[in-house]
Amino acid sequence: MRRDLVCMQVLAKSYAEARGHTVNSSSAHMIFYYGKCSVGEPFALTKDDLDTHFGAGVEKAVEDANALFKLRLFEILTA
Image 1 (cartoon, rainbow, N blue to C red):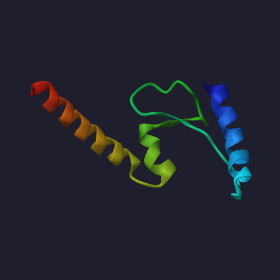
Image 2: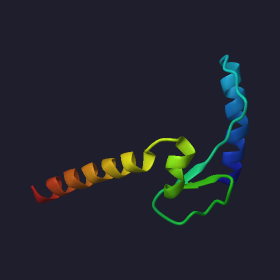
Image 3: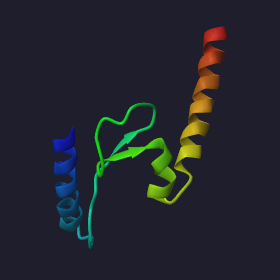
Image 4: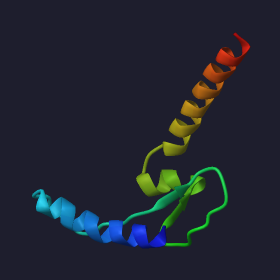
């Protein structure tokens, strides 16, 4: 997985440049939202890192979606 992340990091920059975008840098990360982080920095993001990394309320959006899916699942199971 670490090799794939490094490859993605290298390829993302050239991919964007090949499509006419100006790229200063690129990075690739694996998100560990629900459990143990098995890939170290700088390639790992945890649930607690998301809002800061993306500069937006990502964790709340994921939690809201989880709550909706949980509600729907229990509706289906109890129907």
